[in-house]
Length: 168
Image 1 (cartoon, rainbow, N blue to C red):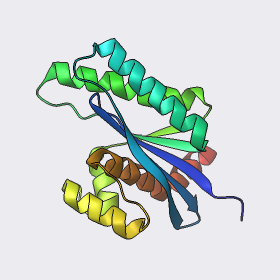
Image 2 (image 1 turned 60 degrees about the horizontal axis):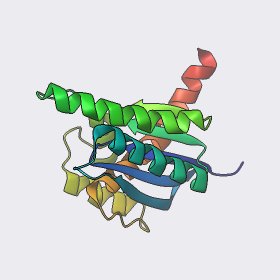
Image 3 (image 1 turned 180 degrees about the horizontal axis):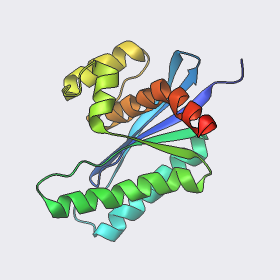
Image 4 (image 1 turned 90 degrees about the vertical axis):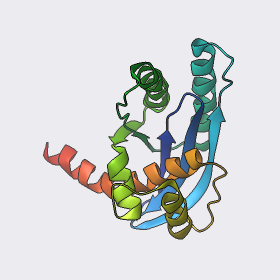
């Protein structure tokens, strides 16, 4: 077997963008690191996006992931909030793509179904299952736990994505 694949999971948010890094070798998953990039509510939207950009850039540079996965945006009733989340998500996709990484997207329900077994799992259930799947992980925020869940989801689904690309 080759070396482990390092996967960066990103849970985009304007207030806090969670990130989680795992290594995947076959069906073995190993926790590497996690955290969040926080922004200040009083800053302008532009400054908050710069903070997300710079924080994720440092993480990609420091940890050198091989692949990235980002949670897809869901549309809610507040169009302005959805638009702002979309802008943060754009930064979250841009940084790994600029580093030459393949970036996959996963719907929130698929992430929950992969981790918890149902598409409507609660945050506490996700944190519990992350503790089971990655015993050394100790995310300090729900955003970091969600980012690890996105990385684990990608680890489980990446083989089918690679197969589709090869057949495609």
